[in-house]
Amino acid sequence: MKEKALSHLRFQTFFASKETCNSQLADEIIGFTQYLDDKKIINEESSGSISIGTSSRILINGEGVNLTRLTKEGIVEVVDYDPVKNIILAVGRIEPCTQTPVHWMIHRARCDVHAAAMIRSEKLMGYFENKDVPVTQREYPPGSFELVKEVLKTLKTSRIIRVINNGVLIVGISLKEIESVLDNIV
Image 1 (cartoon, rainbow, N blue to C red):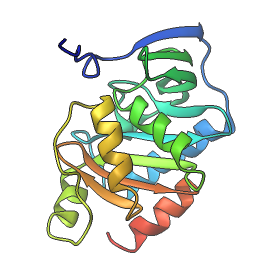
Image 2: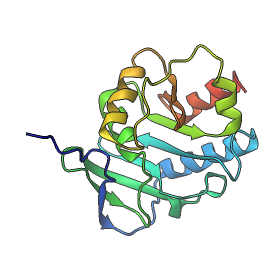
Image 3: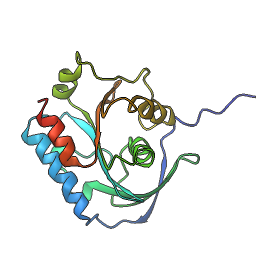
């Protein structure tokens, strides 16, 4: 019997509410994107996904938002994610970004991670191109279960990894810790 390959399909989102996120954590994500912009790590062509996890939820930027102009309307609170059914329950005004399953599973698998940033910018990817930083072994579609497994496996050895054709992923206890890491390399 052939196994259905559904893991590459984008998740389905159900909104519990279409309210704008008013959490203080949203302000931290916005502050982090301003830091990235001020340091010239990101620009208008950059993309990425930035999340903060709580004990039961994550806040993450929405799909297609420009990180250099992120506002609270561009942040989604993910209440729950079912990886088997590939369904997200969210609060927000827009769809969560494609990498939401990756972030959700990182926050669930690693009790030492409360913040994650996967940044695709020429400056950051160029910096890490020839550095001794773990790299995922294969390319998988963004947000796919295969990518989740590959990222979790690669994160076992480092808090900074390169994700093939998806950017640089940095995890930490907070976005301030990720800023400190970036201050030491850019």
